[in-house]
Amino acid sequence: MGHYVRTHLIKDEHLVFETGYHWIIFISLKAIFTLFISPLIAINTSEFCITNRRIVMKTGMIVRRTMEMNLSKIESVNVEQNILGRILDYGRVIIHGTGGSTENFSYIKAPAEFRKQFEELC
Image (tube, rainbow, N blue to C red; front, side, top):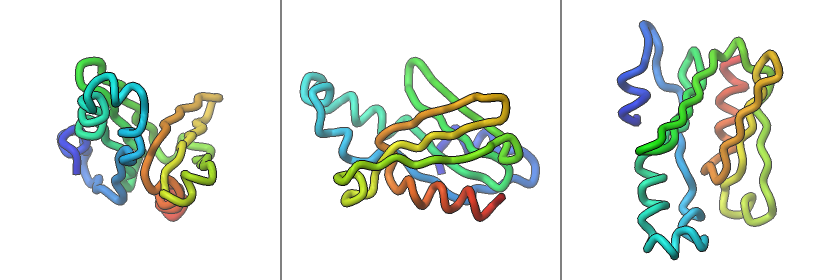
């Protein structure tokens, strides 16, 4: 379990599922131009977790972006995968919250399992 999630668990909360970025992020111009440092930082500083109470997603090292949403406030979790994504098991996770809020996270490994774990909790 990632450091951020471990330090921000609330009383009686436990981790149900955790995933991260897929290794496919190493295959890009950004990775090549940064000598593969950028994807290494992204993989080591990002956490995508489901607890028994909420979904917690954190990305970034210097500029941190976090999204924490109670399970009761989530309308749906959608997954988008192209053919290569289905073969290699990565894709985009789109979370629709109540009130019209939407969060997108791309290149997530095991996105269908992420959605399945969410659905089992609701």
